[in-house]
Image 1 (tube, rainbow, N blue to C red):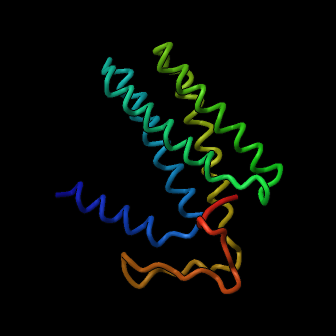
Image 2: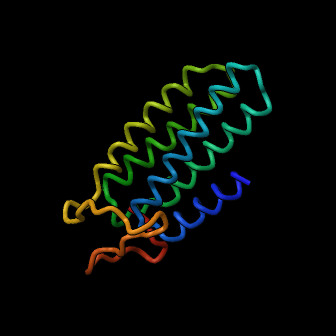
Length: 151
């Protein structure tokens, strides 16, 4: 029951999210998968570790595919390099059965997530929503690419 409610909440959050929020959701998912992989590794749960590492890899791959190198310039190229590095490191962790690469990737993801959190437009006042499902409309004049959340 709780899982269905959580899935419904996450689906609603994704469907109503602006591009910055979508990136935040992906960072959270990647960090959650890496934490799970570390836990499974410590417990000797090989299949579960591999599943969590695969999940983290897929999320990083999605982040990488979302980059718009024409509009994002140097920043998007640097992020692409960082995502590729993290993808290699989590594969190293799986192959070497080592926690150190996972710890490194988790730290990098946390740092990047902090940066995305800081990108909240200054013009948006922090006003509590009317209810748990309320979502603020995008600022007037703001436009995003056709797929909604590229850099």
